[in-house]
Image (cartoon, rainbow, N blue to C red; front, top):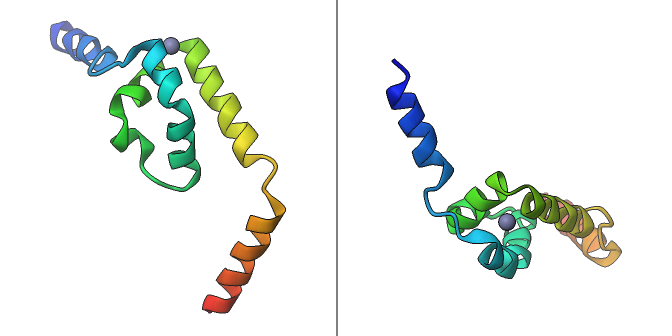
Length: 88
Ligand SMILES: [Zn+2]
C-alpha cells in the first residue's frame, strides 16, 4: 500500500525545480535573503527545491553561505551591536 507515498515522493522531487543554470543565476540573491533572515525558500521555491536535490548546487550554496556568514564584517557587526544596545 505504498502507492500514494510513492506518488507523493515523486511529486515532491520536482515541484518547480528551476535547474542548475537558473539556480546558479539566482544563488547569490538567494544567499543574501537567507543571510538577512528572509524566507528565501518561500521567495524562490524552485531554487530551494533544486538545492535540496542537486548535490553540486547544494554544495555551492553551502559554500557561498559559509563565505558570507563566516567572517562577519566588523563594521556591520559593531553597528548592529550598537543599534541593539541603543534600542533597549
Ligand atoms: Zn544543480
